[in-house]
Image (tube, rainbow, N blue to C red; front, side, top):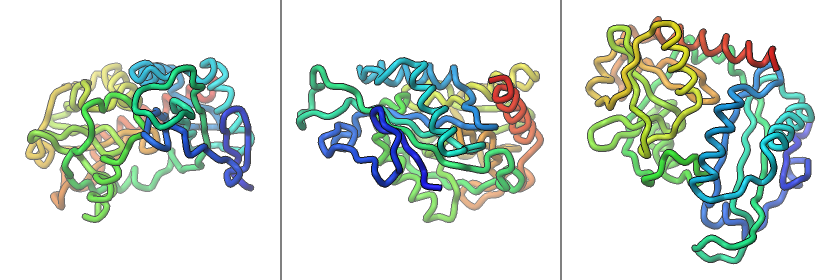
Length: 285
């Protein structure tokens, strides 16, 4: 079955969807995006997704392309048309089509596109084996709290990590881990989950927010603070989270084995708690 995508009011076969070369997303990376998990054919983490998208649009002064309800209806329609049971919906909003000028154009309609991707989220084999991570220099701009489509820094960092035989990169700045290239980063020491506090230096991950809430509800200790590579190498456990990985164990960093070389008990617990939560949300939708 050919994938159906959404572009500015139309549902189209993927190879028929065309974007203007004058779209500011194409020319400047002037836009934002979101990746939302789908379980049992339903979008999950909806409220936190809305909040982050709204904040990103507001920080860049880009207008919503439609109402929030209509935005959700587009995603659910794509899920239905593509018969997606499990995976993600990628959606993107740009400032729209205008002449190439650096300042914001006036009275320009936002562009809105979205598509689905099937993925095995619940039974990802890496949840059992864990993944390798390589450290890489953080080359990104200073407003990483905005989920911008301008991702060249992340592409360079991911390629650096992959070239070292790793699945993910942990970016470093000033001697500290900032976050994963496409994920939030955590270490565990003596049963305490440690992760960098929110600021302009990292993206406010939706899975990060949900996992910390779940940890608190289960009495798992949390420290939101900066941590070094040396601390990570000496950690009992490490893990990442994102829309596509949920809570995924890190078993090696720069060739050094972490903990026992397999996802630890806290990591496994976080994965279990998150899976249960999103399945409950999907069944209740």
